[in-house]
Image 1 (cartoon, one colour):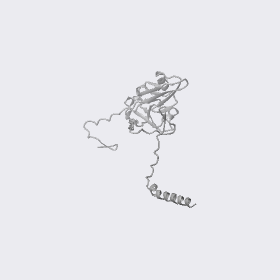
Image 2 (cartoon, helix red, strand yellow; image 1 turned 45 degrees about the vertical axis):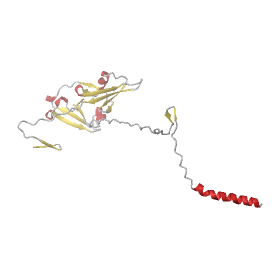
Image 3 (cartoon, one colour; image 1 turned 45 degrees about the horizontal axis):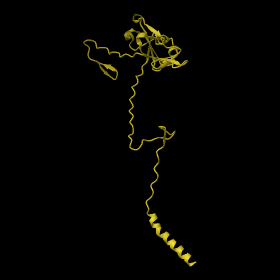
Image 4 (cartoon, helix red, strand yellow; image 1 turned 90 degrees about the horizontal axis):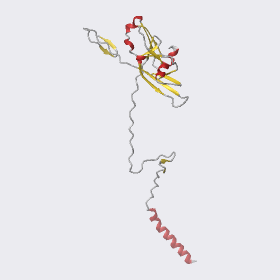
Length: 217
């Protein structure tokens, strides 16, 4: 019995002697997260895959988008045909009546084309000239549009295929043909926008100074 007590006492002393050494051991670093596995060259669904060690991160260059064209009103002649802003060099003295439509006040064929307003020009009889024009339907047929066709003018959709556009005022026509039977063919028409030259000063007149759109001598 006495021998058992001595052995137990010796074991206790050995355990207490080793505690300081264990307490001085360095802390174990936490486990680093493992990169997700990749199967057949494709990452696991819902798990992002980062670059491998030492690999350079690819740089993606994004080309700047072209600036959008400034919005401009739509011009129509005699409430009948779409023209461009400099059609036939119409001068102020040639205008008999001018009307501006901004929304629902426009006649029915033009209801969907008032996003930026419509300027309806009625010239004087002496300034009236014959205008060669085509309907939207005729323009579509000219470019081979078939089946269900939808039209847009300056980005504005219209269901009025009978609207006429002056031939000289058509700036660009883009046709997207239907890819399948029953699909829609899109005909997009862009009206030409011309830079109107500033009138030259009369001979012998003093120069004009333009300040914030106001002319003064």
